[in-house]
Image (tube, rainbow, N blue to C red; front, side):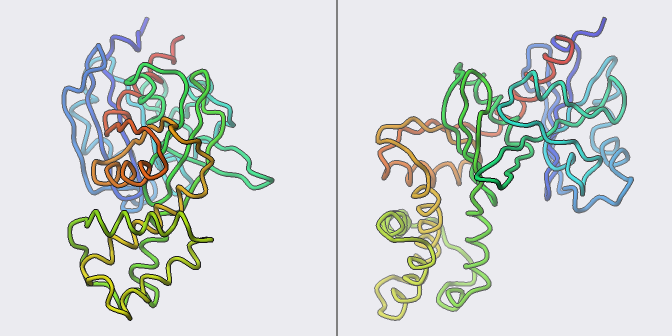
Length: 300
C-alpha cells in the first residue's frame, strides 16, 4: 500500500503571479526547488495539467510520486475550485477535503473560511504555511501573521486554526503609492528601506484615529519639507503596516510568528517591536513542511 510518509512528494504552491515547487525526500527534506512566473492568471482555461507537466513532469515521473498543490490553483480562476474548509480546522479537516484532479496522484488543498459578524473571510495557501510553521517550531498553539497583498492573522489552538482575519495592507499601500494624491509626493521607485522613516510611520499609525487620517501626513510632511523624498515610501509603508497592527488585539509581550519573505518579515518584526511583541520569523520552508504534513494525513 502507498505510504505518504515514504513515497516521493511534489509540493506545489500555485499563486496568482508565481508557481513554486519542491521535490521532497522521504524524511520531508527539500531535494530541489523551482520557481516560475506562471501564476494562475497566466494559464489559459484547461491548460493547468499541461503547465504542471511542463515544469514538474520529470519529478512526477518518479514511481508512486504524489503531488499536492496549495494556493490559488484551487480558486474559481484556477485549475478547479476546491471548497473552503470551515474553521476551526486542522490537518484532518483539510486532508479530508482535498480535491483530486488525478485520483491518488494530484490533489488540490482547500482553503479555509470563517465568519466575522456575519461577513465571511477566506484564505488559500496560508493555512498550509501555518501548519508547516507549527511543525518547524514544534508548537500547537500561537498567533501567526502572514504579510502580503492581503495579510492574514491566524489564531491556532491545539494544532487547529480556530479563526483568522484579513487585512488588505499590501493592496492599500499600492493604491496609495500609485493612484492617490500622495503619489505626486513620492519618488518613481522605492529606495532601500529607511528604518527611521518606517518606524516613524508605524508610530504615527499607532497614535492616529485611523489610516484615513494618518495617510494625509505623507502629503503634509512633503509640503513642509520635513521628510526627504526618498524616505517617504518607507514612511507610508510604516503607516499601513502600523494600521494593520493597530487593529489587532495583542497584549504586550505577545509572541507572534511571522511567515513570509525576508523583506516583509523584517518590516513586520520592526513594527511589532513597537507593540512590545516577541517575533519568531519563518521563511518559505513553511509551505513545504505544511504540504508534507497534509500528505502524511491522507492515508491516516
